Image 1 (spheres, rainbow, N blue to C red):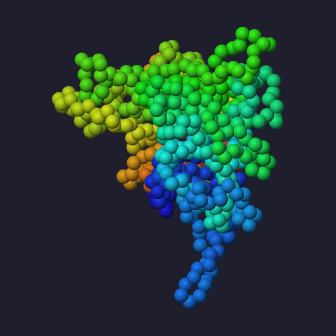
Image 2 (cartoon, helix red, strand yellow):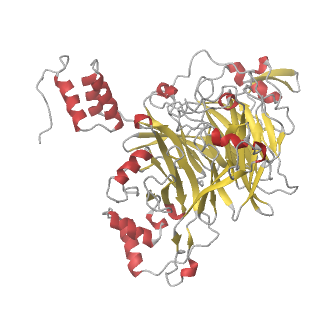
Length: 638
């Protein structure tokens, strides 16, 4: 089940995989851990869902196994076996509550991890059969504990106490499913008593089509026309929202049955202190918007309710246009507040739109301008506290649109941009732009590429049906001075890259006099090592958020990555090697009671210590009396 291997760069990368019995289509990490500290990995495959609980306190032996009576030729005997069979949501009573005898039991102590291979095990798994492939999966965007927005956001209790997800299948079915955060016991899976809630999101038209994408968030259940008067997270001087205010789940999906449409659902949450809330079994759409072109990416704003921007939706269509739509914003203000009927105010407003630049097909020349088309958007994500959008385009280009127009001068120009992937995946014009930014390393690949561009024949254009494979995974983190930062993962084709701090990269780009440093050879964009799927197609890359319980896993890195292949999940867990120099500094600063030495040691381990910090560390070494005889000041000559 685990295939460990490693690669040594600045960190030691440990890789282990989990083989899945079904072909995987999409995977994601639930933003809330289980009560026992396990990360929840949700995957959609060609028959339903596969949910894994990784790490945390393990289940007891009684909860992992189930007692069954087996008939043989001699006599009926009793055996203890694990129960990992798929559970059909249409045949099993999954909506019933879990009896006390079937509730999971845990071991008294946490799992002991090996120092050489600190891999947290998979404590439990759950297989749900839908009878149809799961194509799209949407999870709510819950702010992390380290984010400054968590204390200001109003999160429904059901979202924090249960797994909430929207699932779109190939048979045109759309469901909102809730499950307990705790992993089920073997007896609960055998009896199908999972404590699940399923809401069928039925379309208004009798003939439906598959959803192109889905998005999930929550909003207030009060009148839609009062959204203008709600408190904004950016304006804390407004009045507080009552604690007993009811919230609804908000789902968006795009279909193309007879006309390209954008459909919105509101799912009311009935208060329930035990389960966090109850949802209905079926809900009809409340808002339908026609579209001029097919929408392939839907992303609700990362701004949390009660912010006015919490219901804004990013819509990326196949023509290279990124639009922002708010289904809850009123179309127009009434002429008089005293005489207008608040219930009759229509909602739904287009906020803004951004267009990608034009490009020529591969192999075509500028003599045929009619062949030019806008670059296609592969994936998109909200960043910078929903004030900007990061888009990944075909041929490996990525860029950030400043929606608030704080830093960019033109509407459709990127505030910061770069390229990922191999150089041969980009057109010649982009390669020329990269070469003018700085000296590229002379390798056999670049020499061969220049030779082919000078003396070789023109390559034929790629087929129009070729679809670019890539994605963006953005996780909000806490920046400096209480600001919001983002940890970004970009994957395109078979390669993946990581931006640990988008705010730092953006700031360095603004201070570099117009030079673009977001390219492959610039700082801030690092290649994710250890990505090996053994020939399988890369279907996605996501990152496990930093948890407070991660300190129990040993000296791991700040981020762990989950790679989705065709039949396996590969988890990349990196560890910082213990070099002799760091051990020397650790011994030198051990036992020092002053705060700067400990802070400098942490900066040194992260590789962010400046010259002044190195001077302070060396001074600490010289002032030590145990084990260091030389007390002379050591500094940098210059």
